Image 1 (cartoon, rainbow, N blue to C red):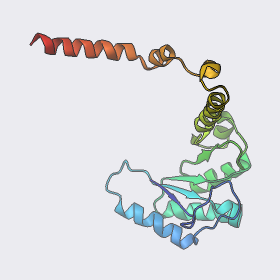
Image 2 (image 1 turned 180 degrees about the horizontal axis):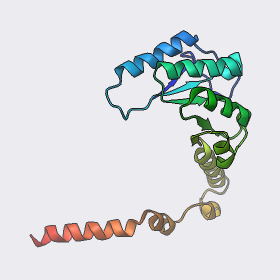
Image 3 (image 1 turned 120 degrees about the vertical axis):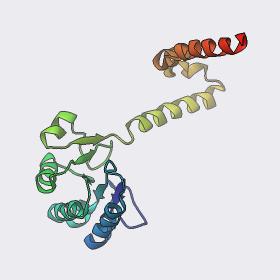
Image 4 (image 1 turned 90 degrees about the horizontal axis):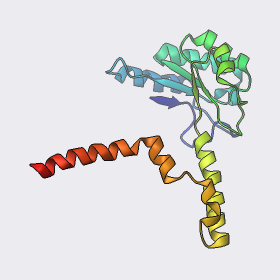
Length: 185
């Protein structure tokens, strides 16, 4: 479970004018989730957007309070330097997540760089989505311009490429084997 400290009128973590709840309210959110946990495998991740609002030390203090309340992981949003991740990791002693989203406040650190800062998990939330959107826009612009997708087919994954990737032919063979047995009965 991922629990954030922004107010209900949430904004993107990499945009200005974010508002966060008090540290006490955030700790209460985490404590309520931890108290309700019935499965030891259930993970509670506390996300804090407080760096942009209150500064680094306040964000570390908030994250530490969340860990004391039962958070298993910390997601400090919009981190701008590797040393900041290290400071969180050193303070909270639980796994840290890095949100590496293009065009945001966080530089596009490599997995190796993040690992050297004691980051345990890396999230790429919009990378494929942004690429798909750019490709879709080119396709629809081509269709609108030309009245057909013929001019943009080279941008697309072919049916054979998709089926090879998914091993779809093995699936069809399994279907054939299953349904040929049904026919013999």
